[in-house]
Amino acid sequence: QVQVVESGGGLVQAGGSLRLSCAISGDNYFIDRTSWYRQAPGKQRESVADIWRSGSTVYSDSVKGRFTISRDNAENTVYLQMNSLQPEDTAVYYCNVNRVIEPSDFWGQGTQVTVSS
Image: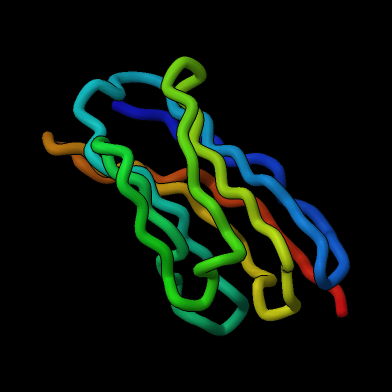
């Protein structure tokens, strides 16, 4: 099993920055991908950024150039640096861990990000 805990959310003005953390513990040897998702009120959960075991990264078009996903292997933590935040970035942000073995999918409880205009 894998435990996932997000932190770092909060209230920020438009144009500001936040850094989210995703602390991963437990049986993390078979992790293939760690992702950040977000869900705004009344909307479906959407993918924001992925980081693969190889270190390669993928971003959604809406955050490309503003958000950066990174990983600290020693701390078993994945980060999401969010710059130039806009009100449309307001959402609950979730960390997802995907393994190559079953059970494969683990989610954190989410952290609220609110961007005021």
